[in-house]
Length: 217
Image (cartoon, rainbow, N blue to C red; front, top):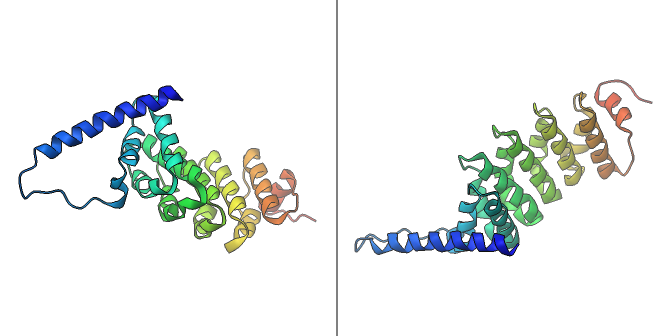
């Protein structure tokens, strides 16, 4: 952990030095615009930049830093969800999930991320919405659509997220009436999500029959 911290600190020192050089070359009367709230914390900005670093150790350290900072990092993480680098987008969604209910501001951006071209970003976005919990109720319709994602991993996390969010806005009905899934793990996850919502255990094969349209007594 000490090594990772030192790596991130080195990045921050280099970046701060570059910023100082750039500031010294400004012409009089050409001041920079007022910084946005998220740029007021250099640690957040350096950590966001480090999410795209070539070194896995640096990326992991940056993710840990952003998670530890918590809600203050949320605005910058929302912007990072739009980054051209899929690794940065994935890391941003993952950090928001680690922050949990205090990342409620990111819900609209995470809903958009459910349509990301990269399946791991979609998966991380679904998981993050689930980690936010009942406060993410507005994401239920989008998560219901995600139950039809081409990736079985994403479908599974969407089902899990619906379970964590709870029964509001038809999450229970969606899990029962969703199209039958050919992947056993997805059916198992959906059954566990239903258990979390209703408190009633449903076997995975019983659930598969229900969602497949077969009447179950």
